[in-house]
Image (cartoon, rainbow, N blue to C red):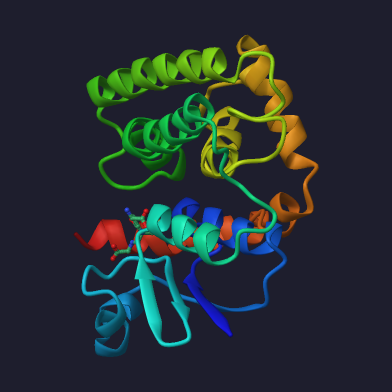
Length: 219
Ligand SMILES: N[C@@H](CCC(=O)N[C@@H](CS)C(=O)NCC(=O)O)C(=O)O
């Protein structure tokens, strides 16, 4: 049985969880609190970098969310979540990489500010972050074009990776109405059972927020 070590608030874990659901695989979820449990020897033995998500498949440990998605796609190819055409595949990979390498790091200071974590009040950093988010959103809007999903008429890994981040943006001061295609795409994603089943509740967000406030205040 597949086992996913995750936390329900983690965007990096959520994309793996969504793919498991989209592929209708059977799996167990192990919820990590990230309050130090990720530093325990049993967890470090699976991932010495102490990050979730970790997927365990029959004794094989896979770390790094994008590597996990590729593993799942290769091992469980139905339904396919990667296009084969060169340009469409490039679009999917661009969305994955730009989300993880550009958008999410830019969202971090905004999340820190929203959550009231220590260090979330650096105005210069916040302005830079907002500028970067706006550039990424316009880039993704153009990349989506008139198709329902990134690089495809069907859901792809690109959509799932972007979906783990973009729907948070209205809470961070980026209403998506300036990006009409992305806004319609977000609505489309939100109707999917895999999105709905993995959406953290306000109670989970509040619990995570107070845990992190306590942790960041200690540092
Ligand atoms: N590049 C990694 C990032 C994973 C990551 O940053 N996970 C965070 C939660 S979202 C984590 O485990 N933080 C706890 C820690 O690093 O100790 C991936 O995509 O899987």
